[in-house]
Length: 399
Image (cartoon, rainbow, N blue to C red):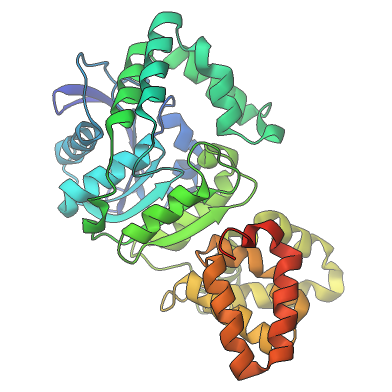
């Protein structure tokens, strides 16, 4: 993999995919390398030109002396794109990479086509915590934080997985303590909340349902501050979602960026049943969760398999794949119709996906109240009970 001089530092990068394809630039999290995007690059490099690089002070990129800000990291990425002759790119960043993406979209909107912010924040206090972590790794090395970091990056069942162990090994072997410390201090000084409202690029914010580092509320806050931003939650994932749940992140990227790079969701291809099924399957898994969908397909048997094929191609490919309406709106439509028709099983199935698609408990309550006027009080009364059955305590903060 080559290096390039950019913004006064040396950046290590990898560029794969068709030369004439739209570019997706991936920015890594604190304490990782460009390898954290291996799964996404492998899946997308057939239709996109995938650019990955090591953030300064990480992996093969140089540790430049002196403190810097998140805006400096954005300037690094801008210089990398300029140096490679890339006029515009989709930018995907996780954690520190997501902060870099926000800062780049503010400072250089000309470079950002679409923006995907994964497991990140616009403000991540307290600053003292980041200063203390910087001191710790300078004094004792990366081993001093490795166990704690892996515990926050992966859910407990995944902490002994191959992906988690490989990530820990890179943290210990490929991340210089000084590079890590300087990035910690930059995060501690960062506050982008007052400026991300200027982001003009279409934006998708993704949070992990079990992320203790940048919880769902932080993702919702960013999505609320960025005009028109979409919001999605990946179930059964902590912080390093791209490694822990690569298929879910890839499906969301395919949907948001579009297979051909035009920003449209995967949709059926006329006359191509296999392509139509795959497009619908990506949307179905992204909304309902891969575990539920795969179980439905596995249990279908010979009798119901044609039905599963049908709903995957048409309901999830053609309807949910039509980006005329955002997924949040489609979730609210599904809940309204299933409530009115008394379809308890389907209503309950779509409750958690609706919250992952950005519907808040307060908006859900408002939907149920309005449904009482148009569909009847008994229908809405039942739906309030169904919502409590499925969501329970998740409703209380807004209730």
